[in-house]
Image 1 (tube, rainbow, N blue to C red):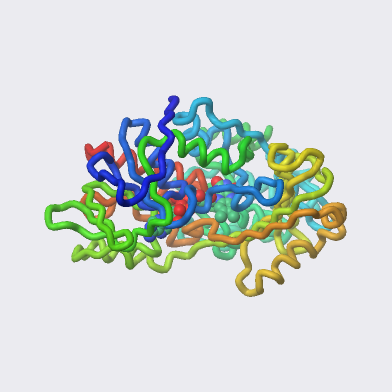
Image 2: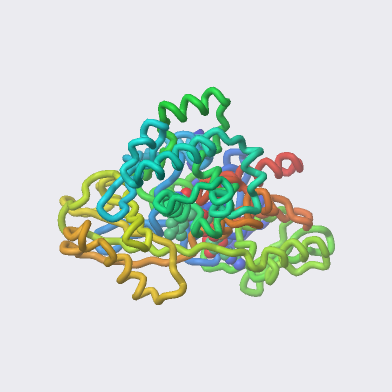
Length: 463
Ligand SMILES: Cc1cc2nc3c(=O)[nH]c(=O)nc-3n(C[C@H](O)[C@H](O)[C@H](O)COP(=O)(O)OP(=O)(O)OC[C@H]3O[C@@H](n4cnc5c(N)ncnc54)[C@H](O)[C@@H]3O)c2cc1C
């Protein structure tokens, strides 16, 4: 579908509320994708955003002559995942994703990929024979597990799951830890086993027993992570241009309340916008202080999610005077610790760096027990001097970012089976975003949550 609406910025005194079918509070990925999906259904929306840009934590910008994203946004499942599918359905031509060339885990002097078959597992360079046999056994168990069985481990941590399977080889756990850490944002001692197993098995698609066995023996190409040409900046701009409606920036929704005739009132800078249909992309952790209602169930719902555990990421962008890495591998430094993920973004999309130069991102989760300066020192030290000296010797641009990466860390109690959306007890108020509902992580989750809310609106006969 080719939607070419070019959503426009509007000021609060120019709003004609009756010209919109929906008000969307919050312009994060969940809010924007919902707006995009509704535009395809011929609906017009007003998007109200607190900050000075669209996209929430999903955006990009220029630093010196480099184009960086907010965070190392390597999009998962670009061949058949929910986000890529959403883009293909709503943007014409669809965005062009460039696949990465696999995961390369470094454990001191040894480097190994994720084994995708029994044969590969049995030659895995990162452990000795006992470790490989243990990995083959647990790998087979995970790959042939059905979703229903995974659900039984919803309230277990991944570490507890591994312990009850007697799979405790330390190198194997360290590698799984670094893979799960990058996706779930928490260590395996905290990550929900159900969510971690789904990530490892890639359960967006359920396979038959025979297919699972074939994949186990012969391997598969399931790790289809990729980068989008044009970066996150290009992607958000394209989504914006395909939305039918208007948006307001620097406009915080301070309050959502009910009017006497059953509509919803949004207070922004002491001005009220009244509309019967509101979709909130505001993080659930702040909804209890925004929603003002006598509705007991609504208060209970928003109070319950007040203290949702989030994850925080740190990304260090390095502009390098010459091309040092020059390939599309996803490198993870497992040991020496801490786990770091290193990618050459300009190898995917040369337009993000000046010609002949390279843009590299180093990413990890924020460790709140140390200062940001100490963490940056760790990121650039601890093995980087030994394994990547040329990067450190040729830095001409350095740019640090930190922000929440996921609104709901995938821990027991916060899995997609626990989360509350898309409906709320308040008539006309729906919720969308990565903490509300929807499987997967990051943009997959945002796309799934947008799909959920649109489906609910259709079921409720209002879209
Ligand atoms: C460092 C980093 C790396 C990442 N890497 C990846 C990756 O590789 N792959 C991937 O798929 N995903 C990745 N993600 C995750 C992905 O970007 C996010 O999960 C997703 O964008 C969050 O979408 P959301 O709908 O939950 O919105 P959010 O981004 O949380 O947006 C909420 C919006 O609501 C606005 N808002 C809040 N309160 C109010 C209010 N009161 N009034 C008005 N507006 C309000 C906020 O300003 C924001 O714009 C990464 C994120 C980060 C930060």
